[in-house]
Image 1 (spheres, rainbow, N blue to C red):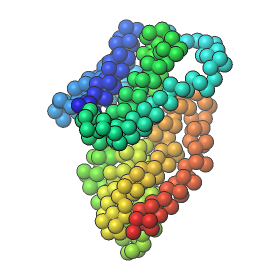
Image 2 (image 1 turned 135 degrees about the vertical axis):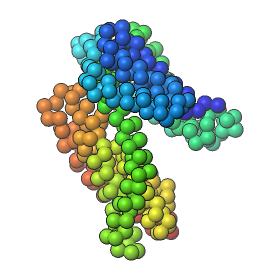
Image 3 (image 1 turned 120 degrees about the vertical axis):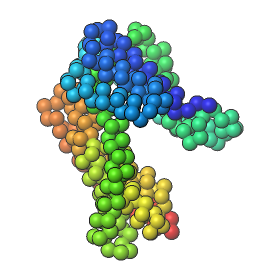
Image 4 (image 1 turned 45 degrees about the horizontal axis):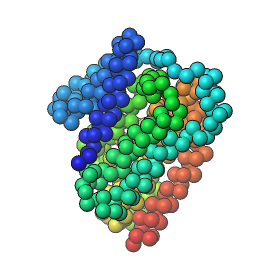
Length: 316
């Protein structure tokens, strides 16, 4: 049976490869950071909480001392990339489309065919596992089609990951922070405050507070996965689901989308909004955020309407 563990090994293999290439170039800090992260993916499921905590502290120490630097491995020149673009145009994106197609089509094929009876994938993990398989298929297709040097994917991946630096693992860290906040009872505190402000029986206003809370907490924490445990414990589960009988699937899924609206608006989501500005060498580090405001706010309004209609009017 293919499980999550296989995906951890796949991710660990990529990080280990970048660590080896960094070590070869004498970039000790980069090699140490990606090597420790690789160890976390390879061994994290088999280590104690204390040992995993030491790995996290090691990552913080390496990144905090500024040891992770940008790299400039041998890759295609700007002129070569321009020639590729002129010759192939948008067809360059074809391999990338293999990933979502494999995830969606593969999930449907697996769940609604005799393949589901084989037990090939761990239950309820099919989509993410197929997402990883899609990445491998896309990489293979690009190699066969474009015929780059064998190490080109590793070198180009290292150039990009080193440009992003420690911010590449920021989503993981912030998601873990959300779980810590939930265990600390932050959600209960916010729920108590919201319960004292929202009029009893006002379903729509509760939906508004929930969606706005998801967006605002995401703006503060930089990650919707960090905001979700807090807002679910504060409002989503006790009020919208248990008190008002809303559809939990709609509330959870669209609530996350409301949080993603906050992702579009915050510099705290550095890997989404600040790193791209740096990679594109934009003069305004908030230029990406400014372009996304016109999408984020109307989408947040739509999410509020979808939750209210889909979770309550159509559900009840």
